[in-house]
Amino acid sequence: MSDVIIRTDKLSKVYDNGYRTAALEDIDLSVERRSFSCIMGPSGHGKSTLLHLLGGLDRPTSGDVLVNGSSLAGMTPERLAEFRNRTIGFVFQFFNLIPVLTVLENVQIASMLAGVPDREQKERAVGLLTSLGLLDKMEARPNQLSGGQRQRVAVARALVNDPDILMMDEPTGNLDSKSEAELLDLFGEFHEKGKTILVVTHSDTVANRAGRIIRIKDGKIVPMAG
Amino acid sequence: MKPATLVLRNITRRRSRFAFTLLGITVGIASLVTLLSLGTGLEKEVRKQADVLGAHLVVTPRGWCAYEQISVLTGETLPEAIPDADVRKISAIKGIQVIPYLTQRTAIQNQPVPVVGILPREMKEYKKWEIEKGEYRLDEKGVVVGHGIAKQFKLYVDQAIPIRGKDFRIRGILAEVGNRDDLAIYLDLPVAQELYGTGDKVSFLSVKVDDISQIDKYILEIQNTANVAVVSDKQLLKSVLGIVGAVGNALQLIAAVAILAACFGIVNTMMTAIYERKREIGILQAIGAKRRTIFALFLAESGFYGLAGGLLGVVAGFLFSFAAAPYISQNEFTAFLGSEQTVRLFDPLITAQALAFSVAVSVLSGIYPAWKASRLSPVEAISYE
Image (cartoon, rainbow over all chains, first blue to last red; front, top):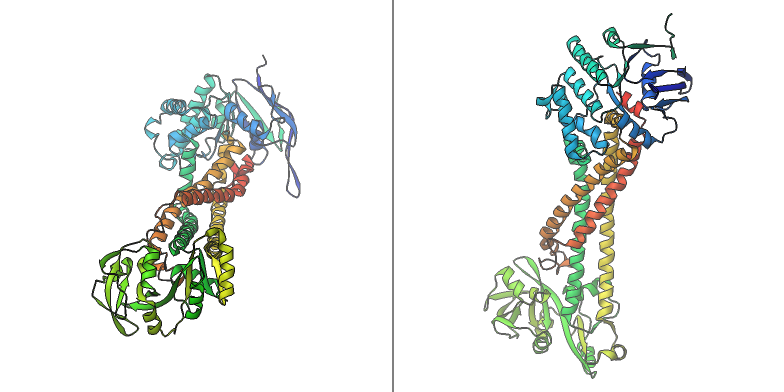
């Protein structure tokens, strides 16, 4: 079995809002299973777009993404949603928790969408929140948490369906250095447990933890020197 | 966690907006229930009064309009128009029993009260009335009063009662019969004719036939005997119910417009909610919500407005119609409506209809917003600020 979990084939994304903007051009990329990779590059050069395409949040203009050998381009929207639910865990810069739900419910919701029974949802969520040190915050609302705590809740939500891949877009962008360090330790643990981690970041601290850095410039992957 | 948790939390996150949207649908459904409830009560009462009239045929002057036909059932004041000569000729027809009515009005404690001139012996036999207090004696100085009127105005036997400036004595109070007969003062017909200056005329005749299979023959015979119009009890009922139904339909249409306006309120609330929660929709999509899940969540929200607004509207509607019925009874058209006997505090059929309608229109109102929400692009939604 191949060690490659994500592979792209001439992946391109062009935005056409009156005038054409090529966000990504002919990206050929492979991501190995259980790797910890960073996507870096200047703002507006296509890092987040690439992450969205790899995670099935957006459709390419041309080319394809294969995850675990399955083509995302051929999936219906419903099938793609199922894929995101079971295979990918997303974490975003702005936490993106649902403010009307408690911490516990914010974590449970991803497994609810997977059709997991109530009791099991709770068991999974409580287990994760305990391991992330948030047991005493389960009934709190997101606005009662610090930035670092919110991001840990977002991580718990991303992990609750035990996905193969964690995709994160600037996950430490809104955190102080202490929270950033704590979160990076967590990522290290998940990586050791066999998760494939793909992080879009500007942070060198994050990049230092990664085994591979993918640099993007002007919508293209910058070849590694040497 | 269940999807309903998310739906309920989302609905109540903007409490004032939730309350006003709910109020819109509540008011619409309440008005519909009120009108349905009063309309149903009215129809039942019309049928009951038609039974009470106990007539196979009703003889009226030619050219009476629908209002006057309703008044035959309601006991309202009617113009005197059938002369005694015609009454005698019609009464002479074999195989029928004729009961003349002169319906007028007086006031007790400044409230209008029907006065009916009758032939005492014939009427008692015809209606099978019983006396609760006093005696059944109608003459130049004496009247009998219905149970309801006596109760309402605390009348008693031997009490003096002025009618059109002349003092009468209450000789007796009729036993309760549970219809508009309870709500009138009865005078001897010649006394009433003299008092109201109607000469020898009466308002209408109630006719009972011996052989119902010959009813068409009797109609023709009565029409040939005098210059009058004859309607069967079924025709009368149909005609009155037709009017009641048409008025009811028009009023229900107005209520439907109120509900339609409330529906636009729901659409507006849902569209606003989608714009406000665009990023959250994106998050749900990112963590695996399918389009149909997003659609169902938003549709459930709008349906909830229908269910909650419908329930509140049904309760408010029944309470209002129940409370309003006695006041509406002051109206001439609905004088006979005003009792708890006709307007029920709860009607399962109306409740089911109103709730089903409320939920259905709310769900329909939610379709477009829910569809819009389900069609958002995840990336666009997540990036929304």
